[in-house]
Each structure stands twice: as structure tokens, then as C-alpha cells.
Image: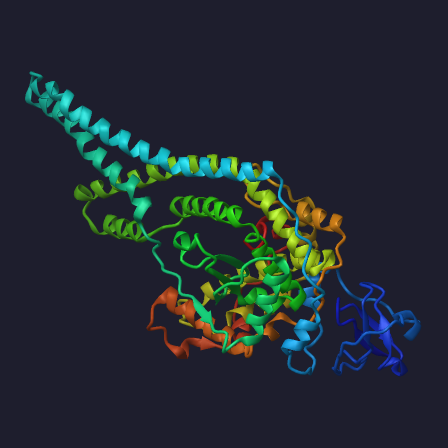
Amino acid sequence: MPAVTACTHCQAKYTVPENAVGKRVKCTKCGEVFVVALAEASNGQVGKTTTQAGAVTAKQAAPSAKPQATGSVGEVKKAAPAAAKEKLTEPDVMAAFRGPIERVRLPIMYRLGILLVTAVMVVLPLVYLALIAAVGYGVYYHAVNHTGMLEVGGSGRARGMVFLAYAAPMFVGPVMILFMIKPLFARPAQEERSRSLTRQGEPLLFAFVDHVCEAVGAPAPTRIDVDCQVNASAGFRRGLRSMLGSDLVLTIGLPLMNGLSVREFGGVLAHEFGHFTQGAGMRLTYLIRSISHWFLRVVYQRDVWDQWLAELAQELDIRIGWVVMLAQLGVTIGRGVLWVLMHIGFLVAGLLLRQMEFDADRCETQFAGSEAFAATVRKLQILGGASQLAHAQAMEHLQEQRLVEDFPALVQLNARTIPPETVAEMEKGIAESQTGWFDTHPCDRDRLTAAAKLASPGVFHLDRPARELLHDFAAQSKATTWDLYVASFGPKVPREALVPVAEFARASESRWKEPGSARKAGHYRYD
């Protein structure tokens, strides 16, 4: 009786004779070796899958084998059912390492470029401060030197108009100064809440991260946080106060970890820590990125002052409320100036930052291999879209006070149900992507081309799910989801509002968008 098996590496499916079960075969799609095991029998029964090494091809074991896999973007969707495996151990992970990656020394012109861009980025906020001072001096100059306006004769109406013309700048000027200074000190409206892991609680993950850093040649983080984003990032734990040392924090998005293999996830970490392989360059780059991110926040993100102004404008009578509206105009003008400075900064820093991303991509490619890099780029497209869909589904049920209990699991469920036509649209979007003048990251097409040219096999090979690096991924995922709700809605979120993932997804109206909209979603790439 014919049976169905699947490659445990790329999930390509084959129809094989029943007597081929247990034989070692080579996948004709990805070239990796696996043991034939029942993935899904012809009558619909699900079997088990195991991973072994060997040298027999799938054609030798099953002459009638027919690949049924989709393109590499669809790997998240087409993953075979989870098999009963032994728990992943540290020796299993360490055995997959094949040594450090090759270090590339940066040329002197590259280092000088970092210094030049840093100087420009530091000057831009100083230019903004100079504009604030110019507005303040203008108000002072007007108040001292234009007092003759108060001596103008004529009718009472005319004198009143002249007085308003004299007094208006002395009201508008301080308002403008106040709201131009505001971005320098205002905090975000919503403080992020992070969940920190401990080495005692997650020894396998910490050991893996330590070995990735050793292979890359970067300092290991002193803290690991997790959140619900499709992202990973590494930075100084205490911001600028940690720049003189190597006090780093690694933040891992559990939806990202849930959708990648250990090999792919390790490549992502190698990319992040690739930014920290140079001493002085690492710190100057951090300063450049910090200023860039500050510009983005103050230009686009609403803060506690904005919320207060918006509420006040709605509550006050229009006869008094026009003062608040004028203040909001000051916010708009201040952000307009910052928007111009931000784009100047991006234009100057863009070329350097994009090159730094290519350098970090080289670390990722040498660690995980060119093929794994390409698979990760494509999986990120699916996971990013699946996360957007999950957020849309969450918004649907806010009025009902229904919340999904495991947000990363909802993202993964959405990723597995992506329509083939949407996968094709994402592939097309990658192929047609272009890097803009103001982009701080290269487009996916350019990154894939650069990684393919390296033709690196990688120094780490382990295709078990990355979530197995955590002692209890499901528990951490639910706890991190709860942290997200507490940060968003406050500490009084009712536990009874939590709904199982499958039930939540069934009750949601939001689905994957029609073909043609996938490419508009943009890039999904870690920092």
C-alpha cells in the first residue's frame, strides 16, 4: 500500500511504497538525508517522522516518489506534524557547532565613514536646539524692540488690533518653544513591559546564545528578554550608560522563535551579535542607531503629552480650546522640523547602515549557511504577515473583552494557513523589492543576492524547532502574552477574558488578504 512521507528538512512530500519505510533516503529537492517514516498515510492517518543521516536517494527507495512541496516561502505553512522526539539537550546543540566563523577586518575608510556619519548624526539634534534658541531670541527681540506698536494712535478698534499683533508673538512663541522642547524630554505614552529569562530557568537557551556569541566573536548578553514581536534585537542594557562596557541585552520575539528552526534562529542571533563584533565601531554604530530611533519616535509616536492635549481639546469650550489647538499646531510644526532633520540623517547614515546590515548578514550566512539565510528571509515574510493578521484579529474582539491566551501560537496558526496565492505574492514582492535612498536596511532581494554569492555551508546545522531551546515554550508564550495585555490595558485585565487559540481564530472574521495586497505589507526583518 503506498504511503506518504515528508523530508524532515524542507517538508517536501513523497509517495513511497510501504516497504520503503525505515530506509535512509536523500531528498531530491533540498539534498538533505532523512529516514522514510509515515507522515500521512493514503487513508489520512498520521504517522511519525524521525531524522537520521544516510546516502540513499529518494528515487532509489521509491521510484514513484512525487514531490508535492511548495516554494520555500511556504515552509512555515507546510511543516509536518510535530513528531514524538527526545527532549533537546545541550550536547545535541553543541554537537551541531562546527567552529567559529571567519572574521573580516573592516577597511580604514569604512571606519572613517563611521566617524563622519556619527558626527553628522550628533550635529542634527544640535541644529534642532539652535532653532529652538532662534525662536526664543525672536520672541525676546520682538518684545524689546517693537514696543512702538503700542503707541500707535487711531480708533479704539485699530489700537486693539495693533495690540493683538504685538501680543500674539509673545504667546505663540513660548508655546512653540514648549512643544519644540517637548520631544527632547517627553517619555513614550506606553512603557514597554519586558519578561526576562534566567540562566537557571533556561540553561539550554543561555548556553546556545553563549556559543553563538563565541562563534561570531561578540560579547555575550547579560540578560535575555522575550516579547510577542516577530523580531530579535541586541543592544546595550542601560542605553548610553552601558556604552563603556559590554553590558548587552538580547530581546527575542517568541513568534519568531516559534516559526524558525534552531539553525535559522541561530543565524538570526549571529546577525544581531554581528553588529557587536567591533569595539569602537560597535559603540559609534549604537549611537547612530539611537539617534535614528529617537527621530522616528518623536516624529511618529504619540506620547503622554499628546494624549493629554487631545483629551483637553475635546473637553474645553472652543472659546478657550483654541489655545490648546494652537499648542497642537506647535506640535505639528515641531515634528515637521524634526521630520526634515530625520530624513537628512537617514540620507547621510543610510549607506553606512545598509552596509552594516550586509556585514551582519555575512555573519548570519557564515553561521547558518546561504540556504538557511534564504529560508529565514522568506519565513519572516510569512511570520510578519501572520503577526499583522493576529493583531487585526485581536482588535476585532476588544469590545467583547475576549483575548487570545497565546499570541505567538495565533501567529503560528495564521502562518500555517496562508493561502498559496499569498505565498506567491510574497515571493514576487521579494523579487521586485528595491532599496530606497532613505532606507536603513537593504531590500530582501539585495540581501538574498549577497548571501547567495557567499555560497556558505554554515558552521551550525540543527533543524529541530527553535522553541525546543526553552524548557516550556508554551508556558513562556502564554506568560509573555499576558505581559503584553498588562502593558497595553493595565493590571486589571480579567483572566476569564482569555480564549484558546483555535476557538479565537474560528470566531475571527479577519483572514489573509486577497492576492495583490501582500506586497504592500513591506519588509519583515529583524533589527
